[in-house]
Length: 211
Image (spheres, rainbow, N blue to C red):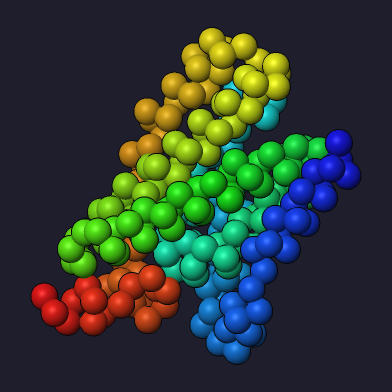
């Protein structure tokens, strides 16, 4: 099981690899600081968790802001680093690392970026739409997607009955969605106001200059 988990993670990291993104990271100091800063802070944030049942961990993600700042590829690698360090610290089991990587990193990052892409192409390009849709709404969606994916996995594989998962884990989404949305939305608000040049997905000429 452990080897399968590592093989799945290695395959996903390989598919996520992009030479242009790597060159950008190696070339720009600000990007390096953001990448390692997010990796460190997410590691700390994920270490502050509660476990209702084994494998059903409750903590904030902060991956939506990471995705909007760094782009989806670097956000996935930052999430992987945070997950690996938490496995080393004993907060996650190694043999379930692939499950938590898919449910807790890949899916939240991709869902956040999907909201951004749809918003960019289908909604008016306005500062408040970016903050509230790409930051607040996407943050709530990301943690919802993560918790739902984990719930379906543990139910489908027979670890726990659905009633146990719903009553003790999935119901907590009601409590977590709003603060997760606030965490990501406020991060993006501060980032856009003070360091817009650091936000990979924010363009002044699209969201500000024409308004």
